[in-house]
Length: 435
Ligand code: GUN
Ligand code: ZN
Image (cartoon, rainbow, N blue to C red; front, side, top):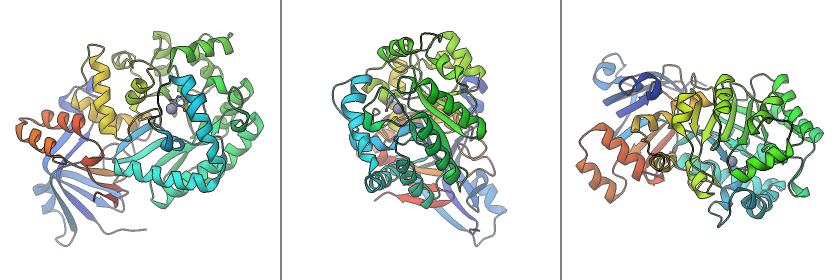
């Protein structure tokens, strides 16, 4: 489908690299009065408006945004769509939270109509928050993934999802088997993987709910279809880690369970990794696997503080995850706000440019999608968000005091949330407008 060339004009920023690797100066490009030119849903050019306008035909449609910031859409590298309706459930840490709230809630997704309803609300919520790509858990039910992909396809979004594999240590009503998990996953892969902008993730819930046979099946699927994702949880909570050690005594640790079944690789995303030893960090980096850093969830469930400097030291790929419904916000801006505090509690800083990286290009790299999303590189999908610096009276007043781009971005990332998202575009089309 060809679309007429169009452009958006305003302040534009995008990330070019990890500040920890390339330095702050080289980590981003900023155009105070910028132009983003879009052809057929892809980025054609980005740069200073005055210079680019000279080369453009006069008749192209240009949308102008003032007091706003245009940037690539947010990338959420770990989220559970079925947990939308149970966000903010009181009082438990991981294992009790799963048993008391999560599992009973996920049972509802055996009903396709329920899954359809939640998938619709969930995708709306992503777009309201400026998130254009997410790596998404379904439930054990095959139809939960159909429901999600149907909505994502209808809006032409770049999304990754998968059916949960879990065949033990959970209520019977939520268990599959190694064989049915394999067959259901395969059917979903054949139906959805590579359709439009959709990708499939083999999704073993976490080591405690998967038998050896099922983890082997996950590895087999990854071998049969080499460009699939692998999405699971790792080392989130101390009791969970002890449990894994008792369930897999022959393995050297939690990560080694996944490694043993050949589940690590350049499209493997491990949520949390809050309690990793140096050997595990090294192995994650060596296999080019990625960690989803989920600060609001880690604080909400009392799981611990993710050690970002350790991840940087070992050159691990890291993206941000909201981890709704253990996470308490769909907003990547609010996730950055909490990430900053997680660093503060460890005597560390999180610069606004590192935050920009994590929220966009870092997430794209974690998903091995940096040649499609996460920056305004020519040929990338034109998935972007327009953020309003003055969306609340307090933000507007605070913005009157700022003296630099850094300060402006930091205030946006600390005070901003869904109210700051003025418009969201996917493949060059507006898919959400505030108000
Ligand atoms: N570990 C296994 N399942 C889950 C889940 O649904 N949420 C979180 N945060 N951790 C998990
Ligand atoms: Zn999770």
